[in-house]
Amino acid sequence: MQVDVRQGRVETEVAEALVLTHCEGEVLSKHDASLDRTLGGTLRELVRSKEFEGKANEVVLLHSQGKIPAKRVVLVGLGKKKDLGLDQIRQAMGHAAKRVRQAKACSFTAILPTVMPRSASAVEVAQAMAEGAILGSYQFTVYRSEKSGTKYVSTMTLLTSQKGQLRQLAEGIRRGVATAEATVLVRDLCNHPSNVMTPTKMANEAKAIARETGVSLKILEQREMEDLGMGALLGVAKGSHESPKFIILKYHGSKKKDDPPVVLVGKTITFDSGGISLKPAENMEQMKADMTGGAEVLAAMRAVARLRLPVNLFSILPAAENMPGSRAMRPGDIVRTLSGKTVEVQNTDAEGRLILSDGLSYATQFKPAALIDVATLTGACVVALGQFAIGMLGTDAKLKESLRKAGLRAGERVWEMPLWDEYFEQLRSDVADMRNIGGRGGGMITAAVFLSKFVGDCPWVHLDIASTDWSERERAYIPKGPTGIGTRLLIQYLIDRVL
Ligand code: BES
Ligand code: ZN
Ligand code: ZN
Image (tube, rainbow, N blue to C red; front, side, top):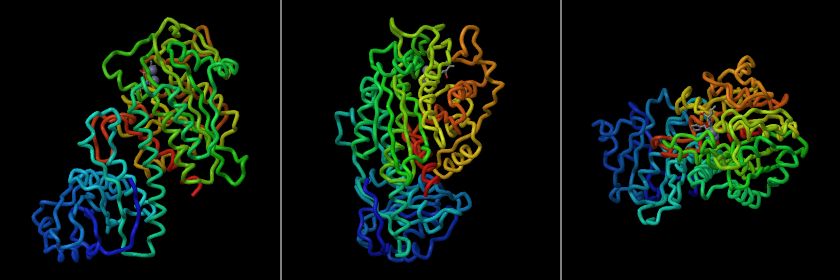
């Protein structure tokens, strides 16, 4: 979707649809009231009769019948003024974009909300509007033969009456388009089935992004992983015919090339059958999205490079498929990780922490200013947090606080769980340095404590996105299926860090 900004007046705007937002229980603003007079009082009547109250998720479309140059007016609710935040704006624009598409229109003009969320800048509001419209319009139709029913809204214009706001709004749009398109990329990569989205395909996606943005790319093949001693990643990959890939992208945006980088590591299991510890059949198809973490660090890399953020950023994707097979890892097998530590694999379905252990060890050589891993790691995360919070555990209080704030701003919130070393008791093995499962209780925590043994003394945070990566229902700007949640959190963290 193309998003731009223009200074102008609602009454003279030529558009297929004009989108106006309205808070619950408020009277029409000065601007809306003057538009309403031109329209012959319809807006006031809708509000007065409570056919439109301004509640969140409420949308009404009316035809202007030639009274103004814009063909249609779409009213969307923002909910109560006291609860107004950036996410209410994102949601309203998500609903608006869908309504415009239903009306078979392919472009619209959105008016800046007359009430602004407290402590939000014009940049942030414009960013949220672009995000809501782009993310709300998302559809995945690659594998549908019948494409005639799928319409696309191709353009949104933000309209402001104040010339002085134009630059800020344009900057917000620039950020919003980059972050939303990153989420769209993640959703696409996750929607592709695992017979297409293999580790090799992920490597090719990384190549395409490196070519587009000019970031540097290195892909380690199986032989090189063997030479380095990545026994944990190789152990997971052994049961599959798909060759594993270890993908490293580097972007140097800092003034100083040797500034310590932020390093992102994303779990990239292109299908998680569980391996020999096979998963039950129910919902197993959702495990095609077990590469969400990898897709997110890849997409964040593309967004940061597109925005030319002044930061050094590295993204690492350990990629493999977890399958049962005659060469597959068995429960009880012991692998030697890149760090030299040995792990007894008591459950082959706890494969994410295995590939991440090698990914994180590899990352420590860069002496990161911040090390963040993102992973659909545990079912326990889903049990603990449900679908509205990302699990966060880590060693660095400042990094955790920055991620918490970025999450609030992005509408992709994190919730902290304890990372106490007492939990390591559950990971002790009789025969190796540790085992890969922690038994009953605190599954999200023991998984993170396992990872903590591979990060050295780097400031590190682990994000468990198993709770949020897949949505059971469609929401304002979140589709049913892969959500891409976590992507905008990462990019917002990087924006906040340097802009
Ligand atoms: N990919 C799964 C975790 C998962 C579950 C993600 C549900 C999204 C939704 C992970 O590899 C896994 O299977 N974890 C096991 C670990 C257990 C064997 C210790 C789990 O959580 O059941
Ligand atoms: Zn698993
Ligand atoms: Zn998994």
